Length: 125
Image 1: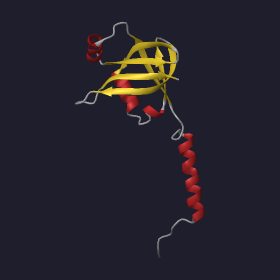
Image 2: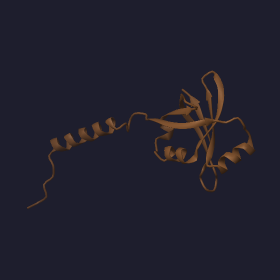
Image 3: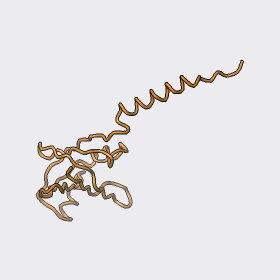
Image 4: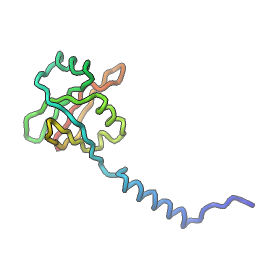
């Protein structure tokens, strides 16, 4: 007895089911990710190096006719969001000292050898 292949109607039903699953899980919609941050008072190369030694990554939130905000985030949290694969296609809610700012990721600078994030820029939406 030969192999039975599904009929066209069951293949069509399977395609519709998969499309529904993708849309319902947000594969085609932009995700909203949350990134907790803290403001930083010291800026510059030396202050940024100190932050990186402590496992933090300096970030800047700018745009939207407001003053730029210098902050820092946990490196592990930023790497976790980068590993989602949808980081640059997502809306990022940056929570700085209890205030939520809706942003879009603009740029992330990586170390040339070990690929750790060195700096991140976010644009207000």
